[in-house]
Image (cartoon, rainbow, N blue to C red; front, side):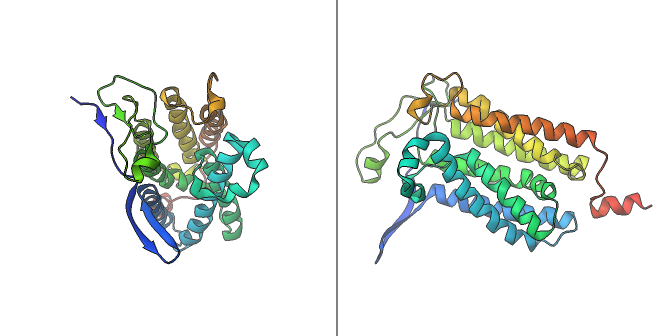
Length: 289
């Protein structure tokens, strides 16, 4: 049904010269932009459904945007190579050299929402639950960006949908011939598919079962499904750093475990609690009849 795909996509969409030097628009950055746009629109939708002012989402976006970037960068530096970055702290700010960790980004968003919710006088779980729907497609698009960057792919495989990725990406961007990996698992696509499924599952729970009435349920589902799938996919993904070689569980799996446990706890807690009084407007109307 399939044939091995030799992936020759160029990471740069367009580049041009400026008085300050060359500037390039990359697919990875575009996926980030599209993802955040979709996330904002989804949050506006859910704020409206819950009787909240959708304009408040724009402030939330700023908190989440900086929380994601700062958390993802610090997560990479402190989780994957702390010795180097603590010895060269100035390079923590050099995001153009690469290195973002999704676990750190998740923690960054979580802390940013706590600050936002306190300022906006909203329950933090109210915001986090709805982000548990809106963030999933953002994560999926970021993994598509990784695909264009020829990074975080998997082990060598003979499955018919295997990809051959470029290993000398810098030279390829400079115009040289590409050097390809052996056919490998396209783990970026595996993760992107799983994250899209998380979006559909949580959106379905919100619509069909009014899951937004149970604080923590959608956030717990997000943690369990996103990091549970991440934990499983890591078994066929190449390690990101040399120190992970030979480990029973790699760093991505070890960092996923606390989120999985938190997700299970949040789901159990939400299901045991009585319905929250924060009903949808439609639910309030029907309950008064």
